[in-house]
Length: 202
Ligand SMILES: N[C@@H](CCC(=O)N[C@@H](CS)C(=O)NCC(=O)O)C(=O)O
Image 1 (cartoon, protein in one colour):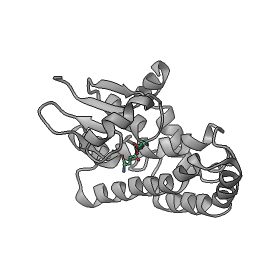
Image 2 (cartoon, rainbow, N blue to C red; image 1 turned 90 degrees about the vertical axis):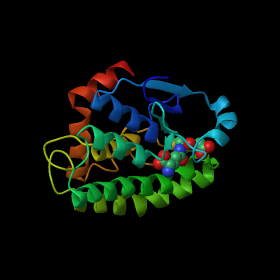
Image 3 (cartoon, rainbow, N blue to C red; image 1 turned 30 degrees about the vertical axis):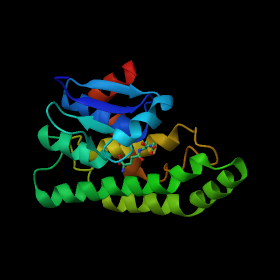
Image 4 (cartoon, rainbow, N blue to C red; image 1 turned 45 degrees about the vertical axis):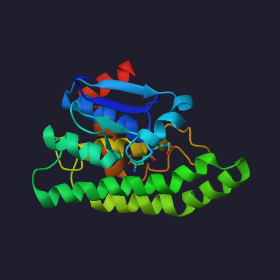
Protein backbone atom coordinates (compact mmCIF):
# COMPACT_ATOMS: atom_id res chain seq x y z
CA UNK A 1 0.00 0.00 0.00
CA UNK A 2 1.69 3.20 -1.13
CA UNK A 3 -0.99 5.59 0.03
CA UNK A 4 -2.51 6.34 3.44
CA UNK A 5 -5.23 3.94 4.58
CA UNK A 6 -7.98 4.87 7.03
CA UNK A 7 -9.68 1.89 8.67
CA UNK A 8 -13.13 2.19 10.22
CA UNK A 9 -16.59 0.64 10.23
CA UNK A 10 -18.64 0.95 7.06
CA UNK A 11 -20.76 3.85 8.26
CA UNK A 12 -20.55 7.65 7.83
CA UNK A 13 -20.45 8.31 11.56
CA UNK A 14 -18.42 9.46 14.51
CA UNK A 15 -14.64 9.23 14.82
CA UNK A 16 -14.09 7.41 11.55
CA UNK A 17 -16.10 9.81 9.44
CA UNK A 18 -14.41 12.89 10.91
CA UNK A 19 -11.02 11.38 10.00
CA UNK A 20 -12.23 10.57 6.47
CA UNK A 21 -13.47 14.16 6.19
CA UNK A 22 -10.11 15.51 7.36
CA UNK A 23 -8.24 13.43 4.79
CA UNK A 24 -10.65 14.53 2.07
CA UNK A 25 -10.56 18.24 3.02
CA UNK A 26 -6.75 18.03 3.18
CA UNK A 27 -6.77 16.75 -0.40
CA UNK A 28 -5.05 13.48 0.53
CA UNK A 29 -5.57 10.52 -1.77
CA UNK A 30 -6.35 7.71 0.71
CA UNK A 31 -7.67 4.18 0.77
CA UNK A 32 -10.97 4.22 2.63
CA UNK A 33 -10.94 0.77 4.24
CA UNK A 34 -14.46 -0.17 5.39
CA UNK A 35 -14.43 -2.91 8.01
CA UNK A 36 -17.55 -5.08 8.33
CA UNK A 37 -18.75 -5.45 11.93
CA UNK A 38 -18.49 -9.24 11.57
CA UNK A 39 -14.80 -8.96 10.66
CA UNK A 40 -13.85 -6.57 13.48
CA UNK A 41 -13.40 -9.09 16.35
CA UNK A 42 -10.64 -10.87 14.43
CA UNK A 43 -8.94 -7.59 13.53
CA UNK A 44 -9.30 -5.91 16.93
CA UNK A 45 -6.34 -7.58 18.72
CA UNK A 46 -4.04 -6.50 15.88
CA UNK A 47 -5.16 -2.86 15.95
CA UNK A 48 -3.07 -0.37 17.95
CA UNK A 49 -5.46 0.08 20.92
CA UNK A 50 -8.29 -2.33 20.11
CA UNK A 51 -10.46 0.33 18.51
CA UNK A 52 -11.06 2.19 15.27
CA UNK A 53 -10.35 4.44 13.47
CA UNK A 54 -6.70 3.90 12.74
CA UNK A 55 -4.58 5.44 10.02
CA UNK A 56 -1.80 3.54 8.31
CA UNK A 57 0.82 5.69 6.59
CA UNK A 58 3.17 3.98 4.13
CA UNK A 59 6.20 2.66 6.00
CA UNK A 60 4.79 3.52 9.45
CA UNK A 61 2.98 1.57 12.16
CA UNK A 62 -0.77 2.21 12.38
CA UNK A 63 -1.78 5.37 14.23
CA UNK A 64 -4.89 5.28 16.42
CA UNK A 65 -7.16 7.56 18.48
CA UNK A 66 -9.18 9.99 16.45
CA UNK A 67 -7.73 13.15 17.95
CA UNK A 68 -4.15 12.02 17.31
CA UNK A 69 -5.09 11.21 13.71
CA UNK A 70 -6.85 14.55 13.23
CA UNK A 71 -3.98 16.57 14.71
CA UNK A 72 -1.48 14.64 12.58
CA UNK A 73 -3.45 15.34 9.40
CA UNK A 74 -4.18 18.90 10.42
CA UNK A 75 -0.57 19.78 11.23
CA UNK A 76 0.66 18.51 7.89
CA UNK A 77 -1.99 20.22 5.80
CA UNK A 78 -2.75 23.61 7.31
CA UNK A 79 -5.85 22.38 9.16
CA UNK A 80 -4.50 22.82 12.71
CA UNK A 81 -2.89 25.92 14.27
CA UNK A 82 0.88 26.39 14.17
CA UNK A 83 0.83 28.35 17.43
CA UNK A 84 1.26 25.90 20.33
CA UNK A 85 -1.23 27.60 22.64
CA UNK A 86 -3.91 27.94 19.97
CA UNK A 87 -3.32 24.32 18.92
CA UNK A 88 -3.80 23.19 22.52
CA UNK A 89 -7.02 25.22 22.74
CA UNK A 90 -8.33 23.38 19.66
CA UNK A 91 -7.27 20.05 21.17
CA UNK A 92 -9.16 20.94 24.35
CA UNK A 93 -12.35 21.32 22.33
CA UNK A 94 -11.63 18.07 20.51
CA UNK A 95 -11.37 16.37 23.91
CA UNK A 96 -14.69 18.00 24.86
CA UNK A 97 -16.30 16.09 21.95
CA UNK A 98 -14.69 12.86 23.16
CA UNK A 99 -16.14 13.53 26.64
CA UNK A 100 -19.59 13.82 25.05
CA UNK A 101 -19.16 10.52 23.24
CA UNK A 102 -17.99 8.84 26.43
CA UNK A 103 -21.24 9.87 28.14
CA UNK A 104 -23.68 9.07 25.34
CA UNK A 105 -22.15 6.01 23.65
CA UNK A 106 -22.72 3.54 26.54
CA UNK A 107 -26.50 4.16 26.19
CA UNK A 108 -26.44 2.71 22.67
CA UNK A 109 -26.11 -0.82 24.02
CA UNK A 110 -28.70 -0.43 26.82
CA UNK A 111 -32.09 -2.14 26.80
CA UNK A 112 -34.98 0.18 25.91
CA UNK A 113 -36.24 1.15 29.37
CA UNK A 114 -32.78 1.87 30.75
CA UNK A 115 -31.78 3.67 27.53
CA UNK A 116 -34.81 5.96 27.79
CA UNK A 117 -34.13 6.76 31.45
CA UNK A 118 -30.39 7.43 30.95
CA UNK A 119 -30.98 9.57 27.86
CA UNK A 120 -33.70 11.62 29.55
CA UNK A 121 -31.19 12.33 32.31
CA UNK A 122 -28.64 13.41 29.70
CA UNK A 123 -31.20 15.72 28.06
CA UNK A 124 -32.03 17.30 31.42
CA UNK A 125 -28.46 17.77 32.58
CA UNK A 126 -25.29 16.75 30.82
CA UNK A 127 -26.16 17.65 27.22
CA UNK A 128 -27.12 21.31 27.88
CA UNK A 129 -24.12 21.67 30.21
CA UNK A 130 -21.89 20.20 27.50
CA UNK A 131 -23.32 22.59 24.89
CA UNK A 132 -22.99 25.62 27.19
CA UNK A 133 -19.31 24.79 27.74
CA UNK A 134 -18.79 24.37 24.00
CA UNK A 135 -20.56 27.68 23.36
CA UNK A 136 -18.39 29.51 25.95
CA UNK A 137 -15.23 28.28 24.29
CA UNK A 138 -16.19 29.03 20.69
CA UNK A 139 -15.00 32.61 20.53
CA UNK A 140 -14.89 33.15 16.77
CA UNK A 141 -17.16 32.69 13.77
CA UNK A 142 -17.97 30.94 11.56
CA UNK A 143 -15.37 28.32 12.51
CA UNK A 144 -13.74 27.64 15.90
CA UNK A 145 -10.56 29.42 14.84
CA UNK A 146 -12.21 32.12 12.72
CA UNK A 147 -12.46 32.22 8.95
CA UNK A 148 -10.80 28.92 8.08
CA UNK A 149 -12.05 25.36 8.59
CA UNK A 150 -9.72 23.25 10.74
CA UNK A 151 -9.87 19.71 12.10
CA UNK A 152 -11.57 20.82 15.35
CA UNK A 153 -14.50 22.03 13.25
CA UNK A 154 -14.93 18.62 11.63
CA UNK A 155 -15.11 17.06 15.09
CA UNK A 156 -17.70 19.59 16.30
CA UNK A 157 -19.68 19.08 13.10
CA UNK A 158 -19.85 15.32 13.64
CA UNK A 159 -20.92 15.82 17.28
CA UNK A 160 -23.81 18.13 16.38
CA UNK A 161 -24.82 16.05 13.33
CA UNK A 162 -25.14 12.97 15.54
CA UNK A 163 -28.18 14.52 17.23
CA UNK A 164 -29.68 16.92 14.76
CA UNK A 165 -30.54 14.12 12.36
CA UNK A 166 -33.22 13.19 14.89
CA UNK A 167 -32.22 9.53 14.90
CA UNK A 168 -31.00 9.25 18.49
CA UNK A 169 -34.02 7.97 20.41
CA UNK A 170 -35.12 10.07 23.41
CA UNK A 171 -32.78 12.97 22.51
CA UNK A 172 -34.56 15.79 20.64
CA UNK A 173 -33.07 16.76 17.28
CA UNK A 174 -33.29 20.37 18.53
CA UNK A 175 -31.11 19.77 21.61
CA UNK A 176 -28.32 22.06 20.37
CA UNK A 177 -30.52 24.68 18.66
CA UNK A 178 -30.18 27.21 21.54
CA UNK A 179 -26.41 27.46 20.96
CA UNK A 180 -25.75 29.71 17.94
CA UNK A 181 -21.96 29.42 17.89
CA UNK A 182 -22.04 25.64 18.13
CA UNK A 183 -24.71 25.29 15.45
CA UNK A 184 -22.90 27.98 13.46
CA UNK A 185 -19.76 25.83 13.32
CA UNK A 186 -21.89 22.85 12.27
CA UNK A 187 -23.60 24.83 9.52
CA UNK A 188 -20.35 26.36 8.24
CA UNK A 189 -18.76 22.90 7.99
CA UNK A 190 -21.89 21.43 6.37
CA UNK A 191 -21.79 24.21 3.76
CA UNK A 192 -18.03 23.99 3.11
CA UNK A 193 -17.43 23.02 -0.54
CA UNK A 194 -15.13 20.06 0.18
CA UNK A 195 -17.45 18.71 2.89
CA UNK A 196 -20.45 19.04 0.58
CA UNK A 197 -18.55 17.16 -2.12
CA UNK A 198 -17.68 14.34 0.33
CA UNK A 199 -21.24 14.10 1.63
CA UNK A 200 -22.64 14.08 -1.89
CA UNK A 201 -20.72 10.94 -2.76
CA UNK A 202 -21.22 9.18 0.61
N1 LIG B 1 -10.25 7.04 21.85
C1 LIG B 1 -10.58 6.36 20.63
C2 LIG B 1 -11.93 5.64 20.80
C3 LIG B 1 -12.21 4.77 19.62
C4 LIG B 1 -13.50 3.98 19.73
O1 LIG B 1 -14.06 3.76 20.82
N2 LIG B 1 -13.95 3.56 18.57
C5 LIG B 1 -15.14 2.75 18.48
C6 LIG B 1 -15.93 3.15 17.24
S1 LIG B 1 -16.31 4.91 17.19
C7 LIG B 1 -14.76 1.30 18.34
O2 LIG B 1 -13.72 0.98 17.79
N3 LIG B 1 -15.61 0.40 18.82
C8 LIG B 1 -15.40 -1.03 18.69
C9 LIG B 1 -14.58 -1.62 19.80
O3 LIG B 1 -14.17 -0.89 20.73
O4 LIG B 1 -14.37 -2.83 19.76
C10 LIG B 1 -10.61 7.35 19.48
O5 LIG B 1 -10.75 8.55 19.71
O6 LIG B 1 -10.45 6.94 18.33
